Length: 254
Image 1 (cartoon, rainbow, N blue to C red):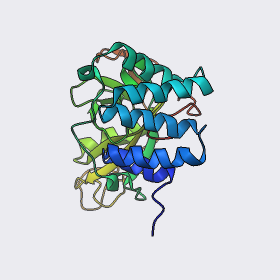
Image 2 (spheres, rainbow, N blue to C red; image 1 turned 135 degrees about the vertical axis):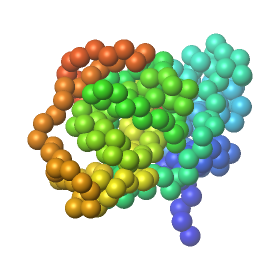
Image 3 (tube, helix red, strand yellow; image 1 turned 180 degrees about the vertical axis):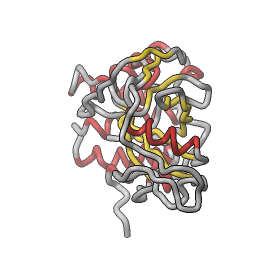
């Protein structure tokens, strides 16, 4: 019988928005380790999503007693202390099956996005939220379903996917994790166009045109300069650097 009291079980419950189960699992974990900050953050978040604001606030206060500089607890404690119930971040309406998080060689890739939006925007994201890939001239932006800018894909991934998307490939993008500097996205190929029908989307090999397609072989020997945006879609030419991902992650992802 599978262990239902692990961090993985707590995360799985959160990804399916089963907040009662998430509360139960994290509570059991905390009985064995009352100072488990990751479990406390997950529990506080689950309480908030379940409408139990007072318990959520109390739980995040416990985190701050153990770690006064914990950014997750600071963010949620502030929100809970100053907002009404209707203002609390809601679970994403576009529910995604946990099966979407399974990685398949060549068809999926976990990516640390770059140039994230301000912290107030990205800290509202929850793992399991489906987002939109928006191709631009020299990069691919990650945006919410309401078209709010979230981040951009790194230039090498953008360059490859721009060509694949233009050739008919289609992709699903899901938030896998968030911290104060980085948005982690899982990309999944959902359809393949004819031009690159025989090639997986995510591989170290350069793209070459299928023998069934017409035209000259495609080349991957050059990369464009990544176009940055200011979050509103205005482009600013320049290079980008991938942020350090060794930061504290969201309450669900920990």
